[in-house]
Image 1 (cartoon, rainbow, N blue to C red):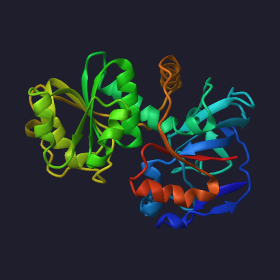
Image 2: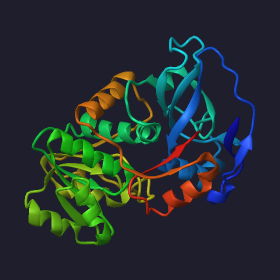
Image 3: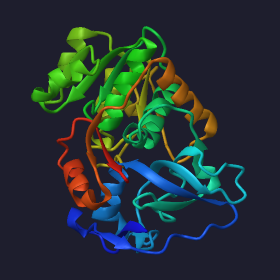
Image 4: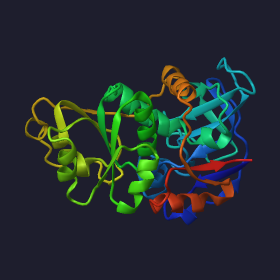
Length: 323
C-alpha cells in the first residue's frame, strides 16, 4: 500500500509517499480502507518537532483521524464494508495512523456512521467536529440564547463551532487577527467579528458591557487570562486549543486569575465514544450541516497540504482524499 511514513522531523517536504506492506489484522484491531482524512494541528507538531520526543517511536505513519470502509473486522463486531470514522486514542502517535491507503486500528477507536456525506466531507469531520461539539456541549453547555465568543474563529475548529452554535440558537462572536477575514467569518454565521489587535476587550465590552456567557478558547494559554476576564458572572471559559503555540501558563494563580463566579474548564479530545459520534451525525443530519472545506489534496500532495495548513491561510478544513 501507499503510506506517508514519518522517518524524521522537519519541514513539510519530509513527508513523502512510500510503498509498504498492508498491515495484517489481529484480535482487537480492525483493518480500514482509508478514503479520506483531515489535516490536524497535532500532525503539524508531530512532523515539525514532536516526533523527536522520547515517547514517540519513529518511523511512524501519522494521522489522528480518518473516514473509510471496514476491510477486515477481526473480532470487533463490525461488518466488512461498513462505513466508519476513526480518531484519537493514540492513533498516529502510539501506533500507525491514517496517512495511508489502509490503517490497522484498535476497535475502540472506530465508529460506524450512517450518512450521505461525501468522502471529502466525511474526512473533514471526525476530530474537528468531535472537538467543537464536545467543547460546546459537554464543557460550555451551549443552549438557545447564549452569547458565545470563539477565539480563533477562522480555524477549522472555530468555523465548525460557529456552525454548531448557530444551529443551536446562540449569538456568536468570533475573533481573528486579520481584519480581511471579517467578512468571511460573517458569511459563515458569526453575528459579530472582533479583531484580535490588542483592543479585543474594548470591542467586546462595547457590545456586551457585562461580559459574555460562554467563551471557547482555541488560541490557548497566550490569551486565556484575557478570556477569563471577558466572561460574565457565572460565565464559562473552555480551553480547547493552542493555536497560539503556547501550551502552558507559567505562574498561573487560580485564585487570582479566575474571576469570582467564572468557571474554567477544558476539553480533551482523546476519548471519543459512539454516543458522541452518533450525536454529532444526528445534529449534522437534522440541521443540514456541511463542513467548511478549504482544499482537497491527494495522498501524493501531502507535503503541499501540510504547507498550506502551516501557513494558516486556509479558510476551512484541509482534506486528503484517497482514490
